[in-house]
Image 1 (cartoon, rainbow over the protein chains, first blue to last red):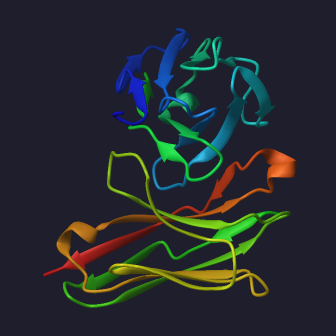
Image 2: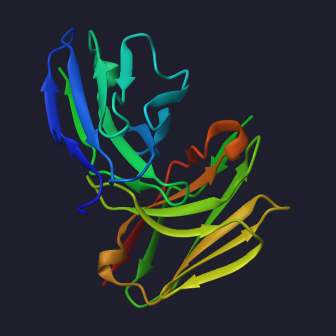
Image 3: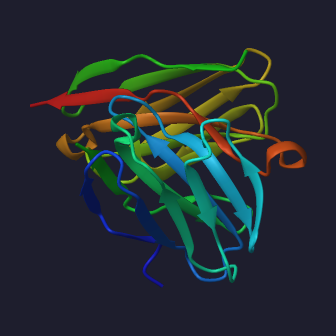
Length: 111
Length: 113
């Protein structure tokens, strides 16, 4: 197993465009988390899945953000009508109840 | 409110010891984690404390006092590759928020020759 993977690693988009990120967790990990990290700050929790069920969403996740985990394996995070304030590193993590393992992240730049 | 505080930056010499303090005030507690994060990379797990006391793992040790809302990460025999940001994170109770982590802003450790 190669750990948590995320795609793409970098994304540059113009304000107002939609973007979608993908996360492939460690196989058999039933819990999947999305975090957002801006420069000089720690990661902030966005949302959490247990298998295919989205059990919690942060208030940070406005209605422009949507996340899915359709088959309880990979997950996607979509941002509609991107704004410059969305520029950040988007981190995915997975766990089987214990330690969380983070992916390399997707760095989003909105111009 | 919920708050996790750690110093912004620390500088130490190669071969020395550095102690990174973390204080927390959170609405629930189910363990404290330390992660290392090199610039542009994902956080990597270093240590986990859920009971009071010291956990040692090679050159890294972590201490927890739940009554004081305090933890520290001790890095011994510093190496240049230890230059990174060190993140303190508190895990929420699983009955509440399914183990999500609340992170501090991170402490940038700079190791000099």
